[in-house]
Length: 430
Ligand SMILES: Cc1ncc(COP(=O)(O)O)c(C=O)c1O
Image (cartoon, rainbow, N blue to C red; front, side, top):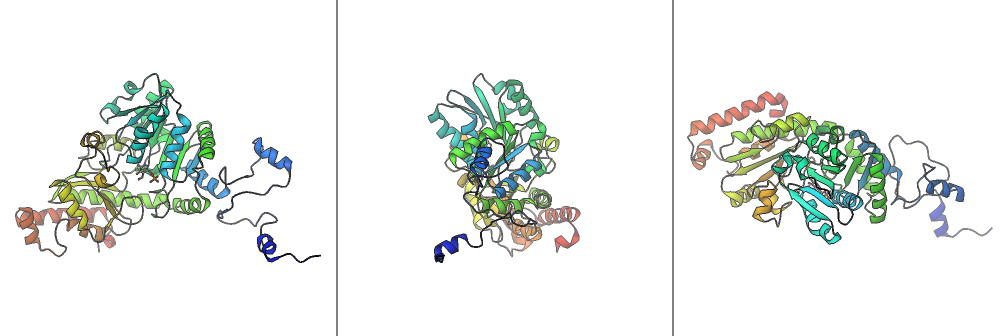
């Protein structure tokens, strides 16, 4: 028999001939397609009578493993993962809306979602109606005869305002409108919208779900019937997540509960500390009694998340100076990872917004956003304490810059540190 050439040998040798041994974790199926034994097997697949896979854009074992974890986390029947959060948003909207339909969309949503709804949907003859947080207090009044989808986010970026999830779910159910929440800022550890009657929960898995700042991904969870039709749109648009990224995200997911617990604790402590800081004008964190939506947050969240937003006197110019002076805290436009990052929303997620749009989106011009890290709290405190000041400044100099008596500065810092001590185990304060 003729010897096989090197190409043939390289292509065929060592590939699966029988199913591999059962691996302890789901391996990365980095393959474009799957092998069938017969035409009958292919037919059974096409008729939905088989668990096999055909082609990775339609389905892939590594991707499905991640989807099943996400569905379980949300108590949902099905999960779908996408190449990015915006891949999830766009695929869902194109699957759910037809021309002459209307979408009701909160003005306080992620900037990318806002732009898609505002700039792209009208070209498809889909009407959009942006609503303020005040209007969202009475969701039933916002639904019209043509409304098919109700899209909102809670907590919102950057002021972490909260919308009553059950009220939106009930209003939508009563009128047969599909309710969709962007649950990115809470994660299913802190907030479970499907349990509250929401039809579809969307998240940028780039954030808490993956949790390591190294994957871009999106997710939708909900009832099987709805997600099945979005799956068909995902096949057409090709917005599925790659198996390698799905593997990394599913690996990150396994530690989500532990990470969220730490995010919740750290952010709460940073928020309380910032409230005492003499140069911080206002702090937004849903766990603070001073937050306008603290009561709603307490009712519907299990924890308040890792985000803290604060304003300094002096507007964007002063916020930019604080931002430029950060050393340990990285200037980066993301959240939910292991590192402490800071961003200025008007220069990132809300770039290009008019003053009126910023107002409607509840995003003040001055807000700096801080995402707390998991394990470096004392260092973050030191950096927050030094906000606007040189790092090795003496208390007398801080008092001079603040225009406050030395005794006031000292007592505020003492109270801050005491509050910290009550919240954290001693070893974390070292
Ligand atoms: C709340 C929210 N939704 C959606 C997105 C879009 O997700 P992605 O960047 O993964 O496409 C983001 C991104 O920052 C976000 O913060």
